[in-house]
Image (cartoon, one colour):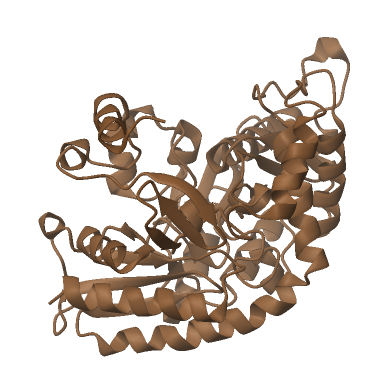
Length: 439
């Protein structure tokens, strides 16, 4: 292996990092991860860091998990990849069956892709083409909430609501309809706005897309109770499709396997990714109903086929790991055990309000955002040039934890298997880092 100095030089010369201002990066000494153990990441100098964001919200059972490693190794001895275009493979078949059994009632078909953004693209294209086949070609628009984030590909950005991410690409995006996201006390106003939109554009709308319970990249914004159920009822009333983006919230993050289970919602399409393969390999899936699936059936010459696919669709390695991921959930009764962890986490989050520059703490399940403000009296935010979120993460790194800011909001989203003592350490580090960075 090249030495540390060589790796750093190569990184700065050849790599372009996502969501990173590279002029700042070139002034930094990067942390280079070499391996992982449980909830810890270990760099090339053998420093250990608690993984405070589950490696971009993906890791479920910890790093280097023996059962997941074994599943991966066993599958690679059979075959690493084979196309799903016109052929099939054993892990993809078995995982599809398992996902149908795990998801809310009515979702009966599984279409694989490779990440959350592509899972959303698949859902949007399915919904759009469904209406074409049903004889409603005018149904082309999608409704979404303000501050929504559904990915960074063109279709996913088109139904997003984060200006700082998406405005550069506005001329590339298709038109969608944005509805204000509610504050906790303003749920009726949000649903009223949603109903007004649906009534006004009822013949044009192909579907509504929503992140259930919590909007992630928009700032860890927790939805008021009843929002998802209310939107689902409106979708039924106005006979449009409901797409639930469970890319972040799925696989136990909210305390149930799926966030939409908290409000007994069965969507028309469900997108999953991040936790699906437990943070091991790129894998995503879009689940849908027989009603939507059947609209694509017909004679070859009719061209009703869903013309969409990915080279690594249904990759056997990823599917084998995903199957073992689900097996661990079931074997260890993880969702039951998780309730204690979530309760402890949510109770301790209140401590952050003792810090004068913490404006709001928003949490749902084992996910939270701590929003930082410059002026406690006026709630004035920190200006971008102060880079307060980045400063907090640097201070946390020095204390032994890896965090990630959403501008001025610090995300806390550890692996689900984190122990209570590890969780306490992570929260103590985050608290101390915020205190240091905000003075």
